[in-house]
Image 1 (cartoon, rainbow, N blue to C red):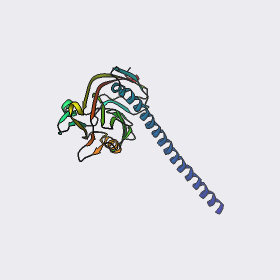
Image 2 (tube, rainbow, N blue to C red; image 1 turned 120 degrees about the vertical axis):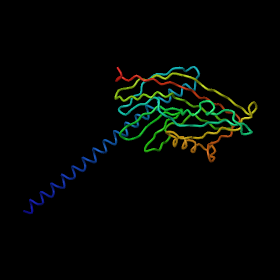
Image 3 (cartoon, rainbow, N blue to C red; image 1 turned 180 degrees about the horizontal axis):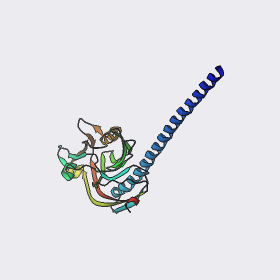
Image 4 (cartoon, one colour; image 1 turned 135 degrees about the vertical axis):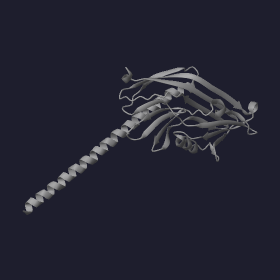
Length: 250
């Protein structure tokens, strides 16, 4: 009888161990695949951002095309982006240029990959790449801002709202086209320029923008905005349209 009880006990321990290892192992494999999928999505969106930022770097660029290789999830080419209020001021505090005067209440727009199950999104917004999870966001690739040696350069990509989402396991073809540009330059001699102010005024990925500006020691934090003292300021805002053609559309 004791041998039978010992066998049953050992068998129960072994079976329980196998079940626990199986459950933990399957969960680990699932977590690994999810992390790999998000890492691939980050690389895909980062590559997409490089293409989009070419419109800012060169006036000769009017068109870019390629594909986004993301398995699963949803791609949205024209989602809501962060609201930034950029203002260039002169020595008396007057406005030389402001986002609100040029674009009103428009946000930056965003190209977004939504993983779905993990409730995480990776987005190209304004020239930078951000990752959002559970309502908070962080910077993956920095926006195109410079505040150095009395010089400020603000370059932004504005994506037009498309309102279309694509879900596909196959590579998604995309095309980006230049729509319009705003390019302004101010200096101390001609315009009495004194500073640039940036207010992160809400919208998705606002935490990521705040983190980026906070980590750059050249931007001074005030109660309502971030400020860069500058004798020379350039403003580049490029508007682009994004169109997609998925294999699933055929």
